[in-house]
Image (cartoon, rainbow over the protein chains, first blue to last red):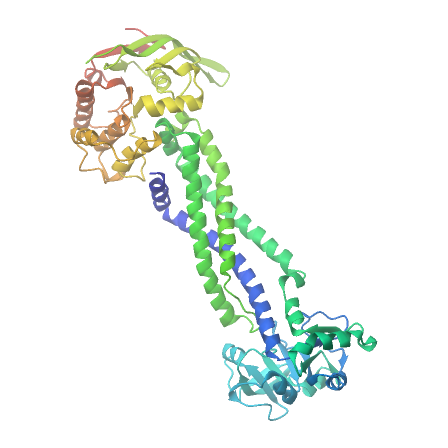
Length: 367
Length: 226
């Protein structure tokens, strides 16, 4: 019966109910989008790192795995690593911001890179054919409507799209290493080195040998497993507090919306609450009605938020930079549902307390 | 129809309201005894205290002093929650403004009284006869806004008696109705009293309405005068 009353009450004011649900949905989608973006970008970065095909990844001293650009390692170190035992291929790249959003371009030695990674799979065009050529991956191309032959500006210079490749290797935009070095004033310098071994089983031994070399002191020398594991929320210094702040803001917004909605509902239903009390309804009964209403609002809002998150993923894929990837995060649905329902119930406590405390006689004479 | 001993005993009942800095004595020592199965009309002019007596008898407010026993339970000694419990089990209300829940159908308005009393929300078979008797069995799926005032008041009566309360309190039950509907509702209350032995206390300032009762109590200035 109470469920029937709750349903009818919610249907009685459809606009208010809908607005409350949408507001809670926005609360939920904020959280799901943020978490989905964090996870999507990390997963994507890990996937692309593995796509390089390297067993060992070397970073210059004092740099973070997450730094987007900078070149502080001498290029000649590639030859040094290539000459070490068990090393089959060593190559490097120089990372540079593409100049738009979060996108970065990497200058590569394409022959070595293809040998290490198993080669690009060209969907259109082919390798660099001239000093103007740019290779992009399919996602970047479709997002920016690029075809082979399109002109595209990167690092303040216009390039010709020479090849469109399947995504999943290192990054989304590629230029010849020497061109990026020269354009950015980093001739002879690189950002990182990738090393492929004769057998992955030798990785630990080779990494240990490199680390034991005093000339490599301070360099970040990682097995690929270690390197990809560094791409986690825990290693993104500002992300965790940022997520918590957004969750706090989102829950607060949901709380306030439900508070206002239920406060208005309780005021509007003063006489009805008086009627229920005149029929013998105890405080718990009235509290139960209002909390269930809030629970339903929270639950429907959570469902809407989950649906919205598919929409934000679509928007991110369509309009955000190619480096931004949003994942759908079903494991977070229970948390966001709990937050939405909990926040809604919390927002109902004061209005409910007010309803329960109402004098029955005054409530019955309320117009 | 009177068929039992006192179901309502009121002794030396006083109620004082504080209005601003002034104490207003609404009831000044009321004594009243109502037998089971009585149909009592309480009449009196505005300010005579009849509504206050109604509210105290229904456990909606506590008396300042005196005792009020409903079916053996002294309301004067009960807390707010205790009085609420008594309302749910021993008292049925019929209000001037019907006071149906607007979002629920007539059927659900009746069912919620059962639910609050902790009973199954489907009235027992014998209550179907009552619904037929009240003439609302074909209107049960309608919401109050789709019903006339007379129909709403009959639903309110059904809701008030569905838990078989010891007393039915009716506060100006015909105050919002036209003459024909008023007569119908009053005739129903009388029939309820005569056929089912329902004890009824009705507040009215309409002598014609009071004539349906088998006993009339007159109040003036917070006292029962006859």
